[in-house]
Length: 320
Ligand code: FE
Ligand code: FE
Image (cartoon, rainbow, N blue to C red; front, side, top):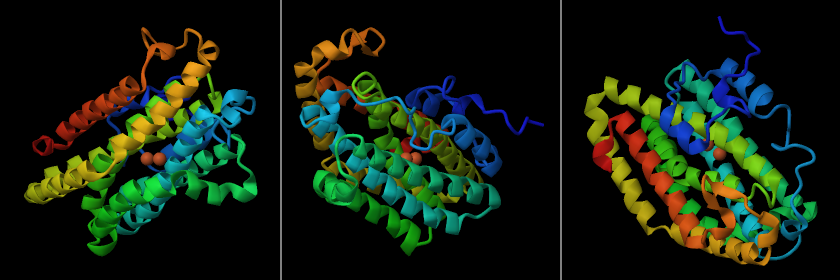
């Protein structure tokens, strides 16, 4: 029997892989990732008891905490992400309600709490970037309300049509795993890497969310895979749903959003290159030498690679 207090290495702060590597290489199931696993892994493991998702002394550099392009880039991103995580939390409540068995019920109950936590830590990090507590919610609307209506609301409606209107558990699992998390996840890894020096707290918050995301992506894929193996007659319907989701995704201005964020970051990076020094965003590539376009394309490339691997695993490669 596993020692109830041992933190699994994929959830351990030091030994967990990166999000992109973990989501491509690990195979976790709902049976493994039950409530006991989560209690060992997350509060005692990934979070190490740090309620706000980062060490007490990890503070943003003043060029990030004060008004300027770096502050705008990060506050816009965190506001957008906090809305996305809140929407995910609410949508997952349907997965909990519709869960066909206890392993998937326990797993989605933990994912619901993970996403609510992500919303909370992204939101609370805004307070460290000069936003006053009384002004927090209006600021989130000002920073990301419009982007949310253009990108997140259409995705949410698509998900709710399956989950709330059709009570389609597996359709909801696939939409969440393939479209929402699978596509948004790589920007989290990019964020963790690019803020590491300028705002180590933000980077740690992203790292923690990324470790959770490995579990969400791998378990979601395994639930879909096992379901499709047991119900091959459902495959055409699921493929159609994915294709419909991809067609919707194509119409959303998400690349434009990522690029706008990277361009703000670039302005700040050029102004404060000295602070970043020789820090490498990925092996062999100094952050100061990258461009907005290059960072956006790299995240996009990770996303495509991750998608491909997971779709093959689920037996849904025809949708690619
Ligand atoms: Fe999340
Ligand atoms: Fe997630």
